Amino acid sequence: MSELNKQILEKLFPGEPPLYDDYTTSMDAAFYVLQKLHSQGWFWRLDSVHDGVICTVQNLKRKTYSIGAKTAPLAICECAVKTLEEPA
Image 1 (cartoon, rainbow, N blue to C red):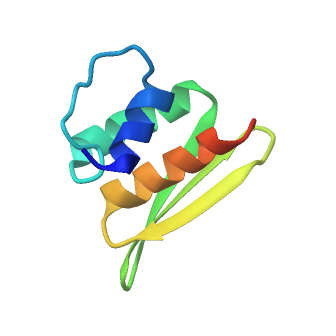
Image 2: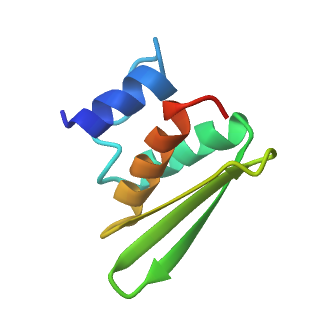
């Protein structure tokens, strides 16, 4: 399991049994991550760009993170981990 997947499981879904094997490659799993973020007050958006996808999340305090990656699930997961690094 990748470090990114471990961080998502440990910090975003602590104590919950994993529903997916890999959040960084599955759109279903990545949308589950977005649902969790939304339940915590984060709003999200995905943008298609020439070399991949940009995921942007923002909370009501206007704390915003934007991460670009080659795939949508990877961009979502990298952005989700950013929201966990410091208090919102």
